[in-house]
Amino acid sequence: MDNAILKVRNSVKGTGRVPGFVQNFCRERGIPDSVSADICIVLDELLPSLVPITSSPRIRVEIEVEADCLKVSVIQSGEGYDISVPGTVCWPQNAPEARISDLSLHLIHSLINELTCTRINEDNITVFTKKCRA
Amino acid sequence: MEVNKQDRENYLYIQPIGKIDTLSAPSFEAALGEYVKKGITCVVDFSDTSYITSAGLRVVMVAAKKSASAQGQFILCGMNTVVQNVFDISGFNKILTIYPDLTTAELAINK
Image 1 (cartoon, chains in turn brown, orange):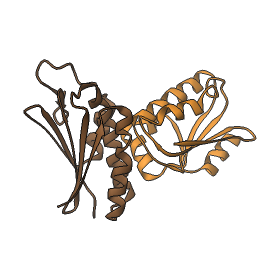
Image 2: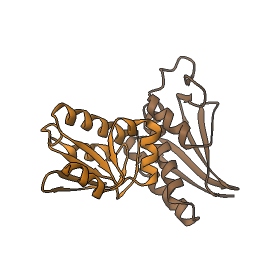
Image 3: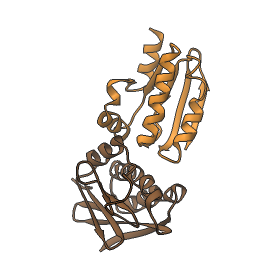
């Protein structure tokens, strides 16, 4: 499996390491800059909204190439939300409403090909894929 | 992100270099600073900007509104396909003045 994992501190500053990680991964594999830029945009829309609700000290970002797609997983624990559905579902049920703007959601959904959100025990897993080769 | 800023003959030239995201948007906002409030014509050249996120779009929108309130011109140009795509998706391309390159933007100012 061709993948890489980055664990960043649960802070906005900590998530600042993610773009470099994504861009290096893509550059080493000959994935176009436009694709890595779109992935960086999506992560910048998502990660800052996760920071205030994440209970663990770190957020895990995993990136892998699967056939002609780039698959990115964001894993954090504590409160979370499912942005793959209209209106956004918050986890657990009594969690405060997700602080992610409509503009961020619109950009995320427009720039990627697939999005899934699941909650397993206390872990919230957001996975998105984007075609990276013609 | 760095911002190249130059006072030119009849406008202020602003060129953000690198990415404009959550972390760098405040620097971009600071670079635009008081100029837009004063109604000075500003040209933001994105030719060396790799990408922009919603954090940067908000800075652009606020600056454009302040500029309009002060009877100024706020012009964007030189976007690569990634940056242009974000403006298109957000619909901001319909409410902002955008030119393909600096030469075209300068021609528009001098009209």
